[in-house]
Image (cartoon, rainbow, N blue to C red):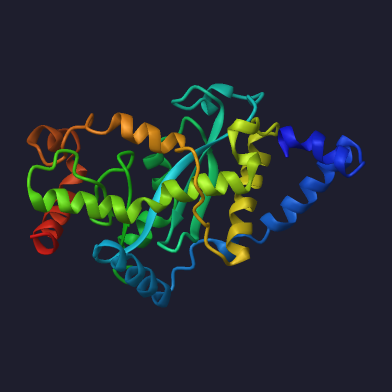
Length: 276
């Protein structure tokens, strides 16, 4: 698709227009079924996810690991500046959530590359779901791009004690599946991998293609197997920027980010209870 469309048309001995028509028909047909594959939040599933994550590093009540990744596309005709991400190329910012079996639980590919990860999260139903005790009693794990809250745990940026270092190690071990899975997903669907060229479609069409790729992984019913690969851009950036964010527990950070205080209290209570 995109830069692969010409080769696909040549292999199948059809015209470019026919290849484009086939791609649109197939992706649209699958996209109409997307509701069946997004976030099946039943109590049985929640209990299953929590049990699986707890087996990794004994972090309680974790139901998923969340992250975003950039999927490149050609510069749109309308408002192209909105799609330029922090790495200076046009893209969509795609949010995914995984369980510890590397199964995609939910995905969202509606937002341009300039959208911040935390902004995308706020536009979804997840904050409402995870803050409603009648619907959910679990937590998510996120990276530095998300604000610490009672239902979304991030790492401590300046651990100073053995329990705090142990918490960080448990958080990294439990959440590392997100970086592994996005690399595998882009290897499986090369149209999502910018190394082979960006998708040459409109943002709406690219959004549909990305969501269909995620749906196909779910429909296959098998987790994303981890393959040896070059570290993803997300992994390299995380390593480079580690240690350059202020500790949310310090008074200055609390004044700048008051909504993190309840999450900080939950985080510190968890460390005191589990990592003594």
